[in-house]
Length: 441
Image 1: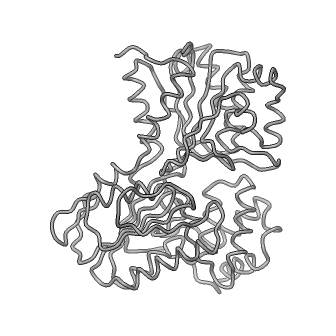
Image 2 (image 1 turned 180 degrees about the vertical axis):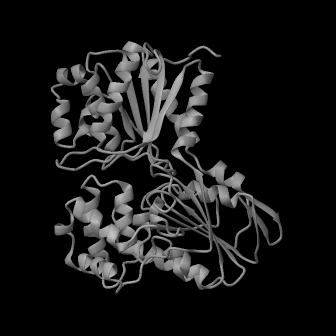
Image 3 (image 1 turned 90 degrees about the horizontal axis):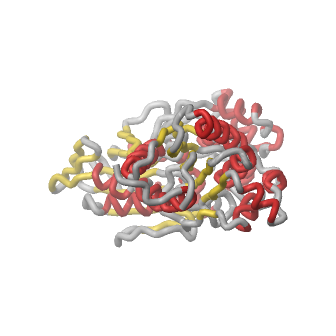
């Protein structure tokens, strides 16, 4: 093994670029697609004979996905739907449609209409390849009648601030939309077009029906599930009346369910676990032991932070998982917004971790949102260790107050412990590096 070149805080920050490289879907999709000849394309081992090929990339990873795709195959038309102000594709010949995130808007409807119009230009034997990634739920939207985009915006605002999991949120989204839960694919399959969906996962468990609300994937959930989620989460009473009416009509069978079967080839091509495994290999090259805890972190971010702190401290003191090295974890914790500050899930997790390990041992954490944006901030994450709380107090700051006001961005900004990458053009969820007895640097 090579000797460790970087240690402690220095090691954590040096690994950020490696995490982002592992999160880049361009080389992955490029390996998946092959042009075998005129009118013959191979996709993840399956061959398609076709006259015309259209590519539609949707989500935060759309720029890099379409870069990889157009570097491998010949296409008739290429669309990329991305957040407004996001990283653009590097390749030429792509029609870029900018939309809004995290809340849908009229731009989201325009994006959906552009894709539906594309379906009308294709026919039997043609091929459309959807490249789907996180963020797509807001970027492409078409409300189920009689709902308006304002109804969906309000519903999404309630859900996103409630601490609901992405699985719960997307269960509801699929039943108030005309393009989610496999419905977008039907505009194409109804015309005899072959549909392929390649997915970059940003959801724990990597279920493609939950990634961007699964626009090409048969939906396993029901209207009854959507109603139940809103009631259990205490949102039902606050939801727009017209939304509740639609969902109740769906339960009664007045409104048709989302499709449960589709003739579509779907494949998840990049996951959070893929990144964690690549990171583990890199740490081995540096001579450091590592253990992958999970790629499925869920729950309130501050609670997840406390749990990870307990694991780190037991390892540091008792060697339960490793006595010196790095624990790796990924997933999608949530934040229940109660304050008016700036922050996000990665920073809340790091702040809670710091509070739990304060003065107790040589452990630290770096949390990173792989899309480069955490919550309502311009930062991707934060670094915290056993000295964070004492440094915060010396600066006149309180971790408890920062968490109470959802203002962890201010905390880490003042301590110079923010991780800032800018928009990355990908999204495979959050990655956490927990360093145990790795000191110095």
